[in-house]
Image (cartoon, rainbow, N blue to C red; front, side, top):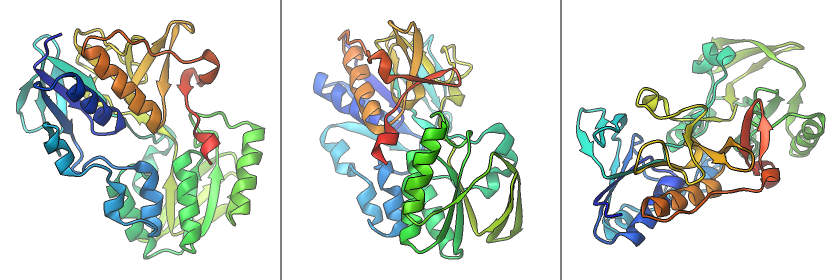
Length: 338
């Protein structure tokens, strides 16, 4: 395949490993990464340590700008892609620039999930997905002494550890919505609460949150089905959803994420999707699964690039490594990391 212009949308592990792999396969082709974020690629698992002061901001970024320059990879940060015309192989940037491509890898990752029932309170909730989010936490923690975390994913548990190190009174709410996409079984609930309590974290036992109200700039009131809690800040961790909203009217097959075959190929020639934004077909299950986690994303990014370069590598997982949650099949092992 003689592709001259490769474009990658996204700047996470799938995107960066795809770019590296393409450069290894094509020494002369043009490779461009577009990212809507203004910051370069970072290590998301270090964000809680950045908040706690354990690491400096510079340490959360894992590739200097020179890395891309040395490999002749064009990195365009703060350049949001708002649409793609697959019939003419071109994409549109927010500032109306039109960029042609011969091969495209979509690796836009995921964004924090706020369930519909909580969207009314979204402006009172802090998430943690990017360095900008981390800086918002750092600023907020200068003014508050207590935090309530509604969570269940790895990020929320890591952040909770950081809050304890900072001496903040930390309370944790585990609900079925917060633990998505994992199933909150009685066994997992007990295991999670036992580990959290050993860290000195207070568990708020409830089945649902009824209401959230702002009492002041640094004071919130949270009403559950069992009690009313006052706190300085509220962290919301309901898992992630693929960041593919701008592609919904482009002709791509989109369910939870972009539907691709077992080779990560979309319905369009020369267009692949990888990482958290993709739903990958599993020939044994005869269904689609989604990937969660850094290593999974990096692997899919490399595979998509190799297939775009002409390989025919099939992405298969053992059926038993994929769990089903609310109709969505997921490959994740994050719980074992806590």
